[in-house]
Amino acid sequence: MLSMIGHEEREMGFRAVLRERYPQCKVAEVLESMERGERAGDLVFNALKGNPRIRGIYNASAGARSVVSAMNALGRRNEIVFITHELTDERRQLMREGLIDAIIDQDPALEVRAAVEALAAHFGRKDDPPACLTTSIHIHMIENC
Image (cartoon, rainbow, N blue to C red; front, top):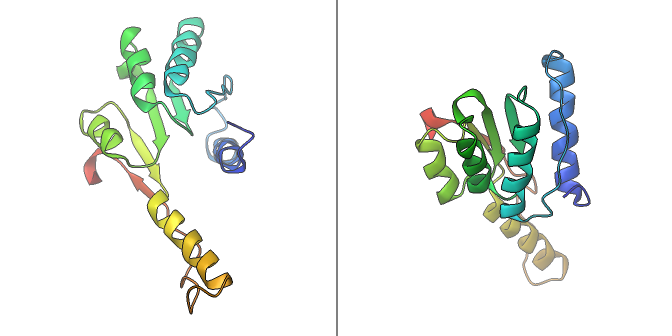
């Protein structure tokens, strides 16, 4: 959902890294699932069916399981690198099964806690704001998941 600044920044950052470090890789297309997991799977299914040259999927949003299902339905799972966000229990399991290659985790629970603490401090409901408003980014792969 590119109307969400966080998703827009993820997509822009992804493109920037590709341009800088992997200029031979090209983005085939950017698809919006509107935060609907099943729609993400349908979009990926159609993209893979229409473009046999796709070798990677970067999912900045919802729908990891349906994306995996789309790759499996077309028999393409072993030829595609799949990267997504947020280490949920479901995504951890998909990674352990070898169905997700990397997960970029920003610890949403910590992000929410820091935001609430900052608001509480601003409105005098807490003495001090959180020590840090920046959350760490962790990259998980099967070896450290």
